[in-house]
Length: 309
Image (cartoon, rainbow, N blue to C red; front, side):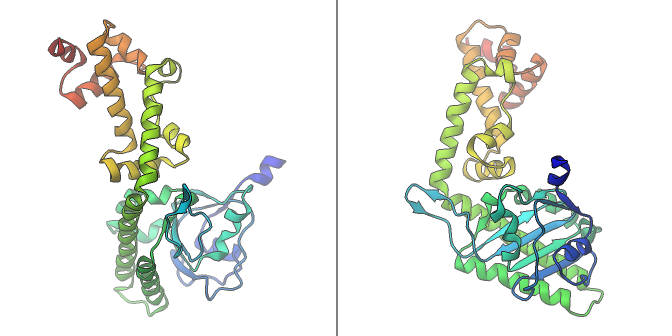
């Protein structure tokens, strides 16, 4: 019975979400912008929920700034949160997270079908921040806040205006502009958090060095991006984007680099066979190890060992 009560509610349409929020029927079934400053009667749904559409929210008040040492480094001009279809939003054990919906100044809801026939239908899937968690919010500076709000206002005007042959083209262009600025500002956020992010990278390096030097690979296999994210409290998408921004390598490539470094060490300092090295590093099949090694070094493990000697 408890499991049934804890099951997230799934909103199958934007209209369904509007009814749950106590809002009138949306003007368009596939896209709508909720202006929190005008919609005082919003009643957030209790518990967690699942959307079948994209959600982009701007919240003027952020309660999840990260503290680095004794100082706060994030901006305090609000932030952007993103959610993709079929992503769970909210948490039964976190009232602040669940009830924060009504604190949004703007909430843009977009059904994937709205993008059909436009390049953005595929391009939007490349933006990793749609799978970031709440603690990975994009914090905005005063200047960035003005830019983001101005785009939301343009979208609002377009959605509330007269529909013509150009309406969808213009709206999709405005959404693309919003996403491009968000991408740009996240890159800036990775830079302004460089000190703490470098600490994270160092922690990951120590963890992988210890992991690959012990017996864990034989038991648990090759380290995963998810396991690294769990270690530092970040989603796989955020971790990969952060690493790519700072060192030019995503999380999977970061793991592979460590694997290859350890493989080179074992090939040059031990008499273990290629298969033994592969299994020691967590590979189920030595052929997989051979392919990865050659793709990274242009040499097979055996060729590397011979050239080294």
